[in-house]
Length: 189
Image (spheres, rainbow, N blue to C red):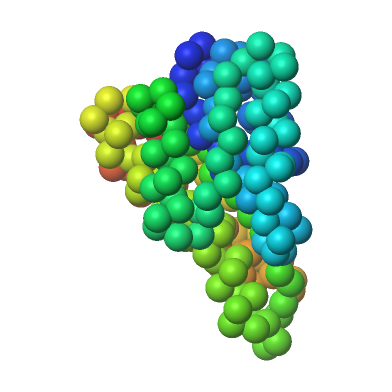
């Protein structure tokens, strides 16, 4: 795929895999929205500095990017993330949902807050940004969506019930988006 001048939104783009995706795609000519709340892996103490530092790297290397610190965990945040791409470049061509947080717990012992926090970011976050981006991709007859799932969604992980549920749900969301997008050249993995 040619990424030259494609507009890509990457949630969780400030560190780890998301950062690598952002830097690679920008080096290939993509215009990148780097979304990341920053802060701790638990999702606490948000800071937009993480996303901005990746954008600074992109710009220093001659690329184009903007930072975004909206949360994927709400419908409004998901819409705002996609709207940032639309406001800046007028379209969205690709979405990589890589946002994540970690809160460990067994089925027996996990608090509802810790369960919901992970589901809100991983699974609901995926839905929020896909639902916001999908109509624009369908109307353009082009789109690529990548939802970063995990083997933990297929086989589970000990002490990670929230993560397993979320990643399994993302697999279902990806399958439905691929089916619904097929006639419009919108692909989802």
